[in-house]
Length: 278
Image (tube, rainbow, N blue to C red; front, side, top):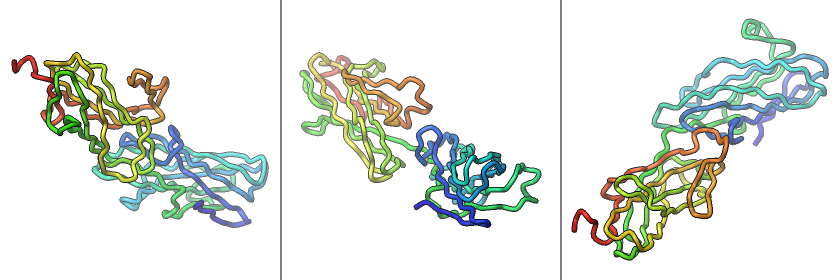
C-alpha cells in the first residue's frame, strides 16, 4: 500500500524506494544506492522546492548517513522527483531494514538552513512498506553429492547421474535467481558437464534444491565434484551447451554465493575406480 501524506495547503506526497540497479527493494551485503521516487501534488508550478531524504534503520531505530537534498522547480502541480541515497554495507549476521524518510520544503534548502525551514509535507511513517528496503546479510550455499540411482559416492565406469543437493541460507522469497553448476576434476579442470535451474524463485529464506548432472561415458577412472554458484537471474545468460556467462555491463556482484570445493568428500563422486586407487 502506498503511503500518501497530506500536509499544509493541500500538498500530498507518496514515495517508492528502489535499488537503482535492479528496481527492486533488496540489496546484497555490499550495499548500493537507493532511489526514492516521490510523487507530489498541490505544488505551485514555477516555484522552487527542495526534497530532503535520509535512511532510518528499523534495526537500530535511528537515522543513518547524511541527509540528501534535491532542489527542483515543477512544471505542474503534480509530478515526481527522485532523490538517491547510499545504502551502507551490511557486515552483520542478520538482514537490516531501512525506511527512506523524506521532507518537502518550499524554496531552496540546504543542510545549513534545513533546521530553520518549515516542512510542507513529510513521508515519515516507519511502517511504510513502499519506502522500506532490505540489506541482506551473507547469503550462502553448500553442496552435497551422490549417485542419483543408489545414493552412494560412486558411479559406474560408463557414467550415470550425479545428484547435487544445494542447501541455501538467507535467500529472498519471490526473488529470481539462477542456480548453475559444473563438474570439476580434483585439479579444478572442467569436465564440460553442466546443470542449472535458469529461474529459481524460493518461497522461503532457507531451504534446498537439487541439480542433476548427466555424466556420459569417458570419465572412467577419475573423480568429479559438482561446484555450484548462485546468481542474480537477470545478470547472467545460459547457453545451448549448458555453460554460463555474465551479461555485458551487468552490475556487480553477478554471483551471490558459491560452493567451489573440489576436494570435499561429501561433494566428490568416483567414476569407476579412480586411477590412484588402481
